[in-house]
Image (cartoon, rainbow, N blue to C red; front, side, top):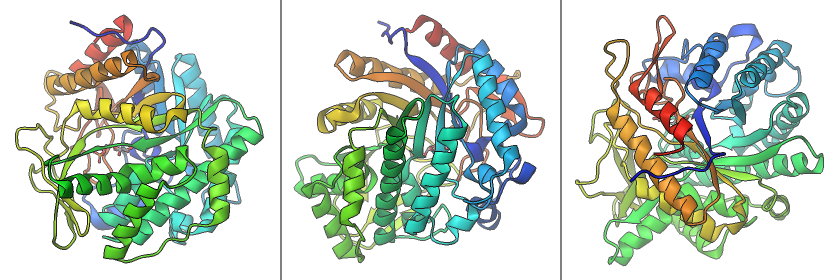
Length: 467
Ligand code: BG6
């Protein structure tokens, strides 16, 4: 039997500046750490990406034609402030005004993120968010955007504080490429939530237009053997690393005892000490009830088992199934039943995990107000034939996740919209151009767009609100 989604539900598509725009040196854009990092460590660059910088009218027209009434866009900080702060690049400002005007023309609501993994190079090389001065630069940049782009109704400060820290300081797949450093990981999480809180407090104090929230990636963590207390502990600790630390700070304004016990244990085993100041918690406490929404990015769940050895994490960047490894000293290791489906990049497909995360937010953080599922989708080696992609696996993936969202709404969760990652094909930070997610296939040479089978399916769901 089909399931219903509310009449006012947003059926959106998601993008991010660095993964979509291309034009990384155009019209005065300043460099970001990724420019060099990709050149030095990967086999691709962010040029041309999906050339959204020039193709956005085409993409927004497609949105209109395919019933997509919301789009996640991020502003490239270094297009506005090429050096991170100081001198404004007016051409960058003009670009985003034109982009938002086009959204309006096509009746597509933009949900605008201020930071989607792309700290300006100047600030990145002086410590990124580990340097507290950069918190203030971020807040100044946010203030500039709130005052300049009054046409925006939905603001998000950060996209996925968890995976940024993870990529930068744990797995080492994001610049600066540091591995297994838990002090930097948690400090970066803390400083970024603090930057979020300061931006939210400023937004509300000054009464700017619209709503503001944060986007978190929330992979669900289950124990491999629920009857083994060591597996249960491993799941709890991994949840603290990726989810709970950030959610606590955002919605409680403090770290619960359970969270701090976990963090202290991890730092004791792996080394490190955090700089958490009393004044930080004043900001966090003020902001905790001011978030208008939480954006949840959900792709996968993990099962965790006990582990006694040294830390070793191997990232599967090529889609060679089974080539990843995740085992952390004093925490645990990933170990899932072979029967649970996973992608070629070893991401476990488990829609129930999304239902469980929504329920967890509702139960543990009842001041969340509203949820948008700001990313969800299937990364796949698409086969382009007959000028399309017959992506039945992607349709199946989206359908199953929309079904559990419908269930969660029925069970009392306030979920207001869904943004498929990604609207059109974009490049993937640490996996290149072959891992595609889009509703629209992009020929990266000609920059032509081709609707996939999933785009026609999504259009129907958006029209009927039935899945
Ligand atoms: C999220 C990010 O982590 O997942 C996106 O917000 C990203 O920017 C998406 O592209 C999919 O991840 P990946 O690694 O497959 O590109």
